[in-house]
Image (tube, rainbow, N blue to C red; front, side, top):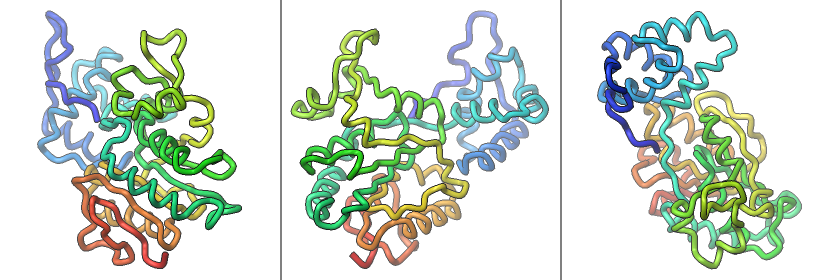
Length: 292
């Protein structure tokens, strides 16, 4: 997720630093909640000011009230609201983040192989909140390494995010050298290739890896367009931005989507304490649906 800037950062000489009043913050806090389900506490006031500052400057607005009026009266197609949500969302990710989750996934894949249990349906995994793509591509690398002959016909990974800018970067699949530093050396040559025309050392995900992943914009605060039962769901470090009611709703939907014995992977700071009893806590923020 993105670094939080101070409200004065990025202002040039002679440009007055932006300020957001308590009332203005209240308007945007309510709008962000309606549009994305993100619950912004009072301590996020400076974050909203800094994140939306570029949107104000794009239109030459000096106050957040002007930008608010723009959103209400001069955004008929909702494109600026989309840009606002993109600016507010946090996007921190990396390849093999919380590596133990992928070790568990690997063991699950090995014991529930397509040949034994999933044919002809195949393996189905969802990366919810995929940001710039490192997580779903890590899932794909893990599956390809664990299952000989895995392909798009036997494995489907849905990768979703609310941020359209991040989804575009994820679909492009281009990464700088420092972004693939955590990828095991044995994977790099098989899964990445040098990217012509990109900064020196940049790589792009190879087609056989990309083919396993489908990217789609999904707002977790709205109804989900998913009907196929899933074997695993990764939703890591996303629920922490929601209030309790939306957290419980998401978890309930996850449970309903998971096949019996399916796995839910959460972030290290997230807990299901007091939520759906059908999920068994395996430790390390990994939960299994009963019945497997």
